Amino acid sequence: MTTDPPRRRWLRHGVAATLAALAPWAGTAARAAAAAGDDARPVVADSAARLAWVRARLAALGAPDWLLLGEQHDADAHQWLQAAAVQVLAQEGRLAALVLEMAERGRDTAVLPADADEAAVRAALAWHDAGWPWRRYGPVVMAAARAGVPVVGGNLPRRQHGEVMRDAAWDATLTDAGLRAALHRALDEGHCGLLPAAQLPAMARIQLARDDAMAATLLEWRTPGRTVLLVTGAQHARRDRGVPHHLVRRGGAAAARACLSVELRATDAAHAEPDPAFDALWLTPAVPAVDHCARVRG
Image 1 (cartoon, rainbow, N blue to C red):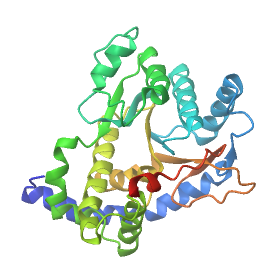
Image 2: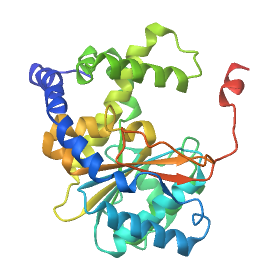
Image 3: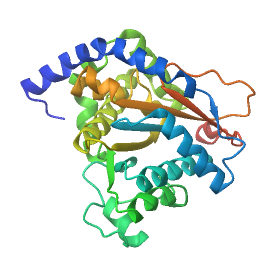
Image 4: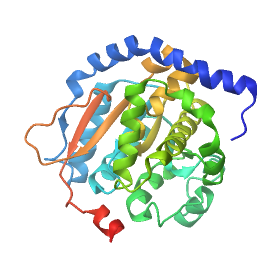
């Protein structure tokens, strides 16, 4: 990414806004503490019960400008809950747009009619089925499309990855040493420990730029009195270093108060400890363990 001097100043000093927003974020998390650890496991397999459960949880969360649902990509129950959230918000006239990590920024369905078929919707979003199986995400996307709600790509276009990896200005968007180390650990684990350590800073730039692209998209679709829903991976939904971090950099402390982030966690544990990087925790059944790294190493 070629970055002009004003842009570099914005990248460097935007971190100050994040630090200034820590206090209001803590307040938001405390207010939402009652919603932490909400257990969808008894109802998630039943569509009517699932819809009622999601409706009650969304009512408890209030009316944020942005609601982030951070998923585990291979947990079907997470996409079921996301589709239910789309249905509830659309039925109540509260859904401004559905933004997806699964489609690139610059793609959307805004010009399509509500009766557009799945092929037209997929074409408008340039859907990449190999990376994001339509069988999982189609119901989430079509729930919004059928309601006449724009479905919007939020992810950094792949063609920009090379430029971003070479642009050290992105390093200044996350200067906290602890958070940067945590991001590097997450990236290392996500790549099965096979990435050379020297490559982690470049990979971190892509992660930061992807989160920034989603934050920019959320800001563009912000609509007074309604909610923009983001469907993304849990790492991207973290308040400390994910999309909310970049919302604060771009929008200031007010953005922290206007955003709520929910972790969707697949687990069979009797007790689940909420992660303080999220405002709420929704529990779903565990998924069968798959050692993806064994296949990669093999």
